[in-house]
Length: 77
Image (tube, rainbow, N blue to C red):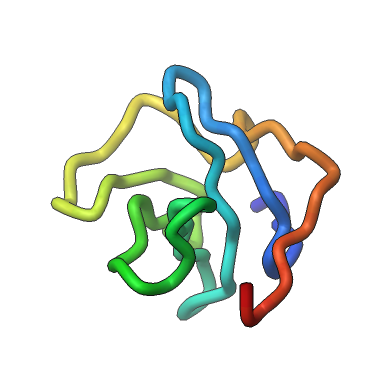
């Protein structure tokens, strides 16, 4: 599975707002970038690279399809 950067900002195909990644249990939680961690993560990347929304619905994309913006969000922003 592709490794994401902690607090790295990514764009998902078909999703308007970017997300930032935090490692979680062998995968990642993807949080809404503007709102930070005040809300639950919008998406979860499983250890095998599948992406699900917070409701558990599997999306038709994998971690390989996330576009790295090259930006990083600070841990306390």
